[in-house]
Image 1 (tube, rainbow, N blue to C red):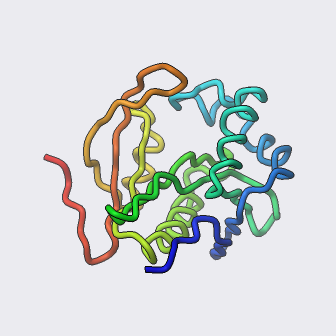
Image 2 (tube, one colour):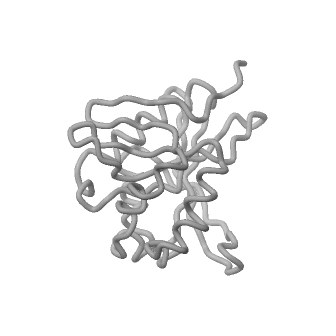
Length: 181
């Protein structure tokens, strides 16, 4: 199997998804500075510059698998996402740390972004996982809308604090995830 490239450039009908760069900080923070984006997120203060820069942005840049999401019509950065926890032996990877500016909520943007990332991931893996804060209903509905199925709950430690997350999965077409009982 070819080693996965977890930071390609992906092009869709309305989006350009390209590797995150250090010089993206200002434009990405401009998209992330809205408190409403983070209101039901496990890290609700991520809209604050020090929290965003030291936590989210620094770890995204260090991951080597993070992206900025660009609206092709305006050429503006409207969000971010990344691959993480690649497990070649289990043929799985996670997609997450995704946010979009509120101007792009409720339409086709999230579906297009996730479809681009899923199509790329399925070149290498059989299963893609999504870890979502249990009470983050907006993200839960968004992944259900693209076909992810609830698998189980798990506890994660987020900055020293235990947090219940729900795990959803999508299997490569033809694999077929079964809903949890």
